[in-house]
Length: 347
Length: 276
Image (cartoon, rainbow over all chains, first blue to last red; front, side, top):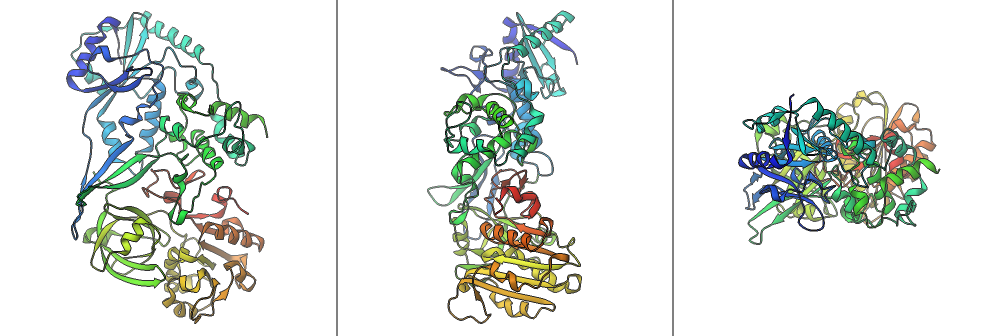
């Protein structure tokens, strides 16, 4: 499809067009750190962000999500499905996050379709932004998920100094910018993108071989590292895991959720809610009478690592995209790339 | 759009007491269309829900001719406790069946060894009934059932029927014998019956369900007497929230217990249940 360019100072025109038709969410910087939130004007946008704490999965798989509302009356069975029909644009997503969304798309389709996820996804438009300043924890290059994006976007922006290059990835994207007068990109602009891509690649210091990871998991089920990580002094300069679950919370491909019922104070109505869960929490594997299938911390951290290596039940759909969020938030300084490297090294 | 999480209303047609804090609820979907379409295989499970309390995975112990589902439930948690407060004619939410059951078609012509512990007999109850109905398709049938006390045993009214099955042996064990003992229940663990076992591993398949610690010991003993891992099938228990392989709680290695199981052959899951 055709590529366009827009001057940086004209980005307002593009955003205003989006704001007219849709709710727009994008990176903002309210305090010390950036996060994805509603954008009301160009002044809210913070496109220089490196990463947010919470990934954009929150727009498709919110931390808490009402599935049903129901009335509790003897003999009656009234259940209402609660679907969210808001149409929205996600503006300025980095390639790692778009790739994570593609993984979740795969996970929530297939034989069994999750209406709640798919409904939100169908109502969304992704305006991605290529990452020219990857953060120090990123290893997207290794995971083939960045720093530049090749698929999964409706519209893709690349910062080429004074301008943004606009590439269209879908009919949805094409419709979204219909009516805007945009200049067609020249060959020089496209070359500039190539150059930016190369320089962004060079900035990534963390490296990991993704093809090797599932095998690493298979061979190291009973490796000492899991005891080190769970109970002893940690691995490669980290402290032992605290089972806080932060890594799952910030992981853009962690999809696990709990389901519970809320009851109104009147005892006459209630709702069924799903809430993001983490395999790092003790209750995750607990069944009636107190039995727990993942009681030991070392088993839980191992499971999480294997899941991110693509060697758990979620397969490639829950594997790592290299965004580096878990490395950043871990209070014990556990680094997935270092764990993988240590596994490969010592027996 | 069909919503897989939607709990369909079902009515309690009958409640049977099975023993100490265990009852069999006979449930039928209220919507005749859903009830008629229902098909199952022994070993699968249903998600039962009480609105306002929650949802639980409960195995199907049998299905009657009119497609009413027998769910044998022990009162151990919030949801089961509220199910126990219901009476005949009351309704609850139900969806399913889910999971892969016992490989009944693939094991035709083989000798069958069933080892069950406690509530683990519930998902095997359908297998035993299936074998009784199709007796000629299977070889020797051996049932070894153990429970904490003889009072905890379930399906006791069927024991005399099971004893009379042709080409069959039947052992009962309990850690503690309480009250009368009409079925000559022995004191001990299920594995204590293995020396008396008639099944030879040569043409046999073992179907095992019970607490995981029991299954680990049973699997180890069976392997010692010559069973190959592929000849042993286990039905696992896990925390489950969705039943369709999404919520993640039941993951074991590369599999979901709810979707790829709950019945696995031992070789598939061996590293993850810590073999002895």
